[in-house]
Amino acid sequence: MKSKAAKERKVLMCGNEVIGEAAVQAGCRHYFGYPITPQNELTAYMAKRMEEVGGVFLQSESELAAINMVLGASACGARAMTSSSSPGISLKQEGISYIAGMELPAVIVNVMRGGPGLGNISPSQSDYFQAVKGGGHGDYRIIVLAPSCSQELYDLTALAFDLADTYRNPVMILADGILGQMMEPVALRQINPKHVKKPWVLTGAKNRPGRRLCSLFLETGGLEKHNASLQEKYRRIKAKEVRCETYNISGAEVIAVAYGSSARLTKAAVKMAEERGIKAGYIKPITLWPFPEDVFIKEKDKNKKYLVVEMNEGQMVEDVERCVGDRKRVFFYGHAGGWIPQTEDIFKRIKKLA
Amino acid sequence: MKKVFGRTRTLRDTHTHYCPGCGHGIAHRLVAEVIDELGIRERTIGVAPIGCAVLAYYYWDLDICEAPHGRPPAVATGMKSVNPKNIVFTYQGDGDLAAIGFNETIHTANRGENITVIFINNAVYGMTGGQMAPTTLCGQVTATTPSGRNVKRYGHPIHVAELLANLPGVSFSSRVALSDIPNIMKTKQAIKKAFQVQMDGKGFSIVEILSPCPTYWRKTPVESLKFIKEKMVKTFPLGVFKECGKK
Ligand SMILES: Cc1ncc(C[n+]2csc(CCOP(=O)(O)OP(=O)(O)O)c2C)c(N)n1
Ligand code: SF4
Ligand SMILES: [Mg+2]
Image (cartoon, rainbow over all chains, first blue to last red; front, side, top):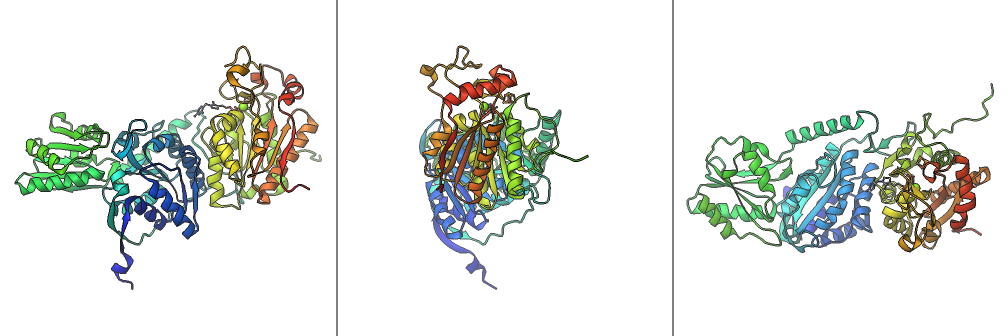
């Protein structure tokens, strides 16, 4: 047998490329994308790798086209992916809504940049609402995974394909410009893609009646029924797929809450606080939808304070407030527009709350 | 009793939702007949538009996928990339293909994607209540051009078949009309040719079909046919604008 070390090549790669390699290892052979910073390395990487592995890479004429190419490839059974950054993700929203309504698997990567509008290309977490609350029209949910380091970019991208197939649902990797650009060692562990049967796939109606994939329900009560079944699926996802990293929440007086890049800096600040004798802990949601609600709801201690750190003007904080149920104990630290929190400053805020 | 006429295999036995005299039903039948005559039903996948033909899958017994308004060519591109042996076609109206989805149309054609596009030009938006389309004739009254299409404001009707014929990726581009029996037969021939081009792997093929919409032309079915023959073909001449490999 091969040693674990041989199977787990550790390499130094930029985050965008890590996402690409994970997709390839997870069996993605259909990638469609349109250039936009700060995710261009991913598109270029897929162009190169798809040639090597005999997959399909297509630079589309727009993000609208890209997401609909994903729709078509997925309808025919492929593990398909597209990636973009904030403005491009806005353009994909109609397609994502259709994919959710048609119940097709798809993996969408958003390497977030600053907004609104063209904003700038600096890192940001300003698309939380768009990703988590349903950026397109209709009552639908997508699974949102929030990596905070290169290893998670790799592992969560692989997971995204399995979840998409399992639930016939779009899955978004919500990264940001720091993660996409950063070079970090990552273990390229062997990925064993989950094999999910897809009896709904369009192949041509050989020896059977034609099949249809659509999100249109005109018959009386049809759309209501469809929505009810979607909600049922979302409840199953909520029950089974919540992922979250916690540290010392039972012993803490102040619990910092952060995801993605800001979680790394927040973790360092919590450590700093502990070293100075402050009782601190953290909650790092890994799935932003489903949100780790129970971690907050089940907390019995009604004196604990929460400090939510985000690279935006306060988005996830609304979910934390909702789950804690007492706004007076939830505090926010964050800005939009390319601002990156400093460990020292987060520490100062934890100290003030302790 | 001897059966002299029947439903072709690819058509479902169902009622139609189209208005009396509408061209969509005829076009559906022609596509179904061609698919059956070519024997490709079991490997064909269709992409339905958003427009009056959104329910195409009620009529064709084929594997069919819905696409957002204007995006069928992108969806078809994704499909064809999974299994090039599938015969993939889109069926689109003039709003779908030549307005909101024109970028996808041009680029899919320009890439020479080996798919077939059935383009229903009825000079209006049927589904949303008869508004102006990119193909609405000069002076034509619609819900959004109550005094007729004003060329100064909206320009001239777009000639899709001619425009696409200019692209190297396009192997077959033709315009036909559902105006009378001989023209309906020609339409069928053009559709067959377009699918054959795809079967031969020659690239993008499109058939633009002038098709009656009596409801929003505010005409009887018979007057509508007359309108195609006397008015519409003057703006949109019939013919083959490109046929690669033809001696
Ligand atoms: C994004 C979006 N915009 C607008 C609409 C509304 N809409 C539905 S069909 C249609 C036009 C259909 O016209 P056409 O493509 O010519 O098809 P026809 O009904 O004439 O066959 C419009 C504007 C929509 N469904 N989606
Ligand atoms: S509105 Fe026009 S295109 Fe639509 S079904 Fe009626 S006749 Fe046909
Ligand atoms: Mg029309």
